[in-house]
Length: 479
Image (tube, rainbow, N blue to C red; front, side):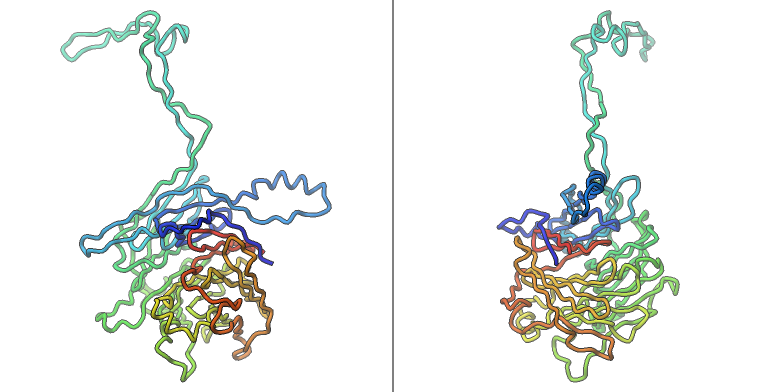
C-alpha cells in the first residue's frame, strides 16, 4: 500500500512561476532537487537518517522494528536562471528549468546541472562558516598596553625625505575603533555557479544527462546532441546531428537523450517517430549510424492522423543495471531490453481511455503534453503521470499484475485504486499489455481534467519512494 505526504506548501492560488518543472534524486537518495518555471532550484535533504544512531539503540531493547519511511525537509534554494532576450534572433528566453541532473559530490559539497531552453549551468552548494565583523577599541587600558595599541614609537619615511610619527600615545586611542573579521561557529549554505555552458544549441534544450565517468555530460535539442566536459564551458563536440540539408526533408526530431548508467561509451536517444537509437561513442566522432534501433511497428490498417503524434516518445530512462530502457509516449509506457530489438518486452496502457477524445486533445494542445517516466532502483516497478494529478505504478517483473493509481493531492489516499486484473493480452507470449481504462473517464470513473496534469516524477534510487509534482506542490509517496 502506498502512503503519501506533502513536502511543500499547497496553497489555493497557483502562480505560474512556482509550478514545478523538474525533479531529480541524487544517487544516494539523500537529496532531492526541484526546479520551477521561475528559474529557481530548491533542494530537500533527507532527515530520517540523522536519527539512525539514537533509534538503533532504542530498537535493540525492543522486540520489533519501527516502520521507517523517508522524510525530506527543505534545505536551501537559489536562483539558477533569469529571463533573457536574444537580440540577434529577437527571441525571449524563459527562465524555466527544463532539467536538473546531480553530479558527483566532493568535499561535502553538492554539485548539479540545471538548464533552461538555451543555457546550462554547473552549480556547487556548500556549507561555509559565517564570518562576522566585530569592532576593536584601540585602548591600551583594556589590553594591558600590548597588541595593536602598543605605545612603542615608530618613525616612517615620507616621499620628500621627511618623517612622521606613527606610534600610539601612552594609554592608546579610546576614540579609534577598527573593524575585525571574526569567524563564528555558525554556517550557511552557499550556492555558487562554477560554469556556464551557453550558445551551443539553436533549438530548445530538452535533455541533459551525466556520464558515468564523472567528467562529461550530454545536452540535446531537437536536432543535435552535444558532448561536454564539466571543466570546459567554451567548447563542446557535436556527436549527433539529424538536421537535413533541406529542412523541408525533416521527418523526425530528437525528443530525449540519456547516458548509460555504467558504460561511459553508450547512450540512447528517442525520436518523435517512436524509435530509440542506441549509440556507441567508440564508433566514430560523429554518430551518424546507430548500433541498435528499438521501435514497434504499427499494425496495418490502424494508421490515422494522430498516429505519429501519439507515437512520439517524451521521455526515456535506463534501468539502474543498464539492461532495460523505459520509454513513455502519449498513450503507453514501454519497457525495452537492450539485447532484444525486435520489440518491447512489456507495454503498459496509460491513456487508452483517451483514444476517442484525440480530436479534442489536439484542439487544446493536450496531445503534445510531455509526461516523464521512472523506474524503481530494483527495476521491478515503473511509474508515470497522467491527468487529474494522477500517476500510475505498474509492476514490471515477470507475472506481475500490479497496476496502482494514486492522486497527488492534499488527501493522498482519496484516490487509490489497485487493479489486480489479469493481463489483457499477450503478444508472442512476451509482451504484456495491461492497465486499460474505460473510455470517457479516468481510471476511477471520474471525468478527466486536462488542466491538472502530473508531468514530472522521480523514483528514489534504493527505496520504494516516488517524488511527484502537481502544479506548485511536491508530494512524496512510499510503499
